[in-house]
Structure formats: C-alpha cells, structure tokens
Length: 338
Ligand code: PMV
Picture 1 (tube, helix red, strand yellow):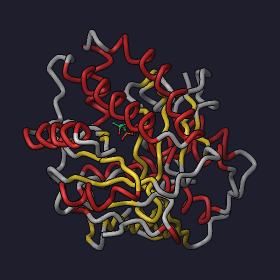
Picture 2 (cartoon, helix red, strand yellow):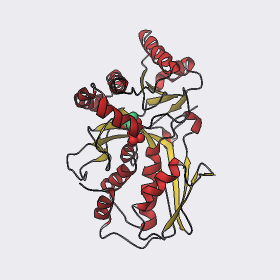
Picture 3 (cartoon, protein in one colour):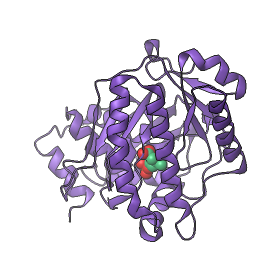
Picture 4 (cartoon, helix red, strand yellow):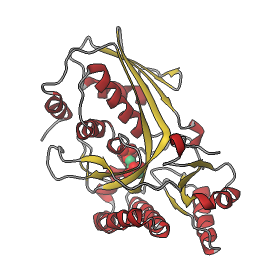
C-alpha cells in the first residue's frame, strides 16, 4: 500500500528542488452534480466512484505561501489561526509532505472569495490553491494531472477545484491512485445559475470524512450508491451536451438525495438536514409544480444550492430572499450577481 509521501516522492522526482521565496494562486470552489461519497482508500483519498462538478468561477480561495522561520503560521481571511486549531494542523500535516528538511517552515495566507456567510467555506478550493502556490514556490512545473493528484491528497474534492467549468473526477482503479484525478469537460453553459440558500453557516458537527467513513462501514443502503452514480454520470454528461436543463436538474437533485439516503441509514445516523433545509426542499418542489424550472443539490451540510437558468433568476430570487446567485460561466468569471 502506498502512503501519501510515496506518491509525492514519485510525482516530484526529477523536479525543481530549489524553492523561491513565495508562491501565490487562486482556485475556484466546486459543487458536485454527481457526488463523491465514500473512499476505497482512506490514506490517499481514493473514491469508490467517479464524480462530476461545476466550479464557481471567481468564488474560491486565494493562497499565498512563503518560506519562513520558527513555526508554520496559517492566516485565514486575515486572522492568524491558533497552531492547534484543526485547520492549521491539517494544513501543517499536508505541508509536511513537501518539506525538504524539518527546518523548512511555511507561512500561509488564505483568503476565501466566497463570503463566509454563504455557509460553505469548502476546503476544496483551499487545497487546490495551495497546491498551485506550492508549484510556483518550488518551481516544479507540474502538469494538470499531477496537480490534481496532489490536491486529492489534501482533500478528495480538491482535485476537481484545479479547473473552471464542468469537471469530472475519474475514480481510477490503480492501488496507488495515479489514475484517479480530475479533468475539465469541454461543455460550457453560460446561462446556468446556482443559488446559495444559507440555512446555517456554523461548522458542521460531522466532517465529510467522518460521515463518509461511517456511511461506507454501516449503511445498508451504501451498496446501492455505486450503481446510482453509474446511472447518473452518463445522464449528466448527456444533459450538458444537449443543454437539457430539466435532465441536469432532475439527475443532480436525485443524486444528492440518494447520497443523503445512504447517510441517514448509517448508524449512528448521519443527518445534516435542519428543519429549514427540509422546508426549502419542499419549497423547491412546490415551485416546480407551479412550472418554475428549479432544482437543488446539497452536500455534507444543511444548505441548499439551487440550480436554475438565467431567465428564471428573478422568479427564484423572489422566493428565496437573500439568495446569493452564482454564474459559474459568468462574464469575467465574476460570480456573485447579487
Ligand atoms: O472532499 P471532501 O472530503 O470535502 O468531501 C466532499 C463530499 C461532498 O461535498 C459531500 C460531495 C462532493 O463530491 O463534493
């Protein structure tokens, strides 16, 4: 079995070893339309299934990394995190993979361009931006596949945040995961919109890592998940090709609900929904019955992400006050319209 360090050594062999002073990079957040839920390898973040996401344009993370002295420091949105906070520890453990000796220290400054109040400060864009900034700092000049694999070692879904637009993470089969990485799709959809319905921006009680593990180990419904993904992936690919909005929305919503069904059947149950989440889901269903083309997806948390098209933005926003609307393919990749 390979360790993270083995994979890093393999990818970096023969690459630049003389670090400069600093590296800086941006990576977009991404929302899966066909979800990644469950690992076949916990150490390397290798997934049971492939997944497919859309990136959020200008919404994501900007990371600057500098070499320094003393101990690692992590600044998040202008605040220095305590060294023993879970995020700072996770970043330092990840940086351990790249230190050339124990005296190599890093100062990391990360800024999310997603308003924190939007309730989904995801680690995916952070790790993807960190990998790109390390590539600059060390002058490795890695290709997209290698960057995606390194990002996956930080957080699974981070391997999709290396790219804009629609992105597919190919699960791969190799034990060392060298064939498990993300690739951008050619399709675009300028009129596609995503609306963020914030139910709560509190940190979730169960991390996605823990929720996935418990689901895989205890949920009797998990055996159905790979076949659900195998049906949904070609559906979403076809919907993107044909710009068939209903096909896209229906498949994404049903995929997210199936993922949540596997969690709810775990023991102890993994339930991320709040009463307001369910109320919002019912509102989406009611609006659809009235003829409005709107669907939702949800991740490991209580918030909803609505899917609709530009022409319906006014109607959807009228039903969900305070909706933050994202245009993943928006002009200049400016994402939030309102
Ligand atoms: O990459 P992680 O460990 O944050 O897991 C992400 C899991 C989901 O957001 C629920 C699904 C996905 O594909 O992004």
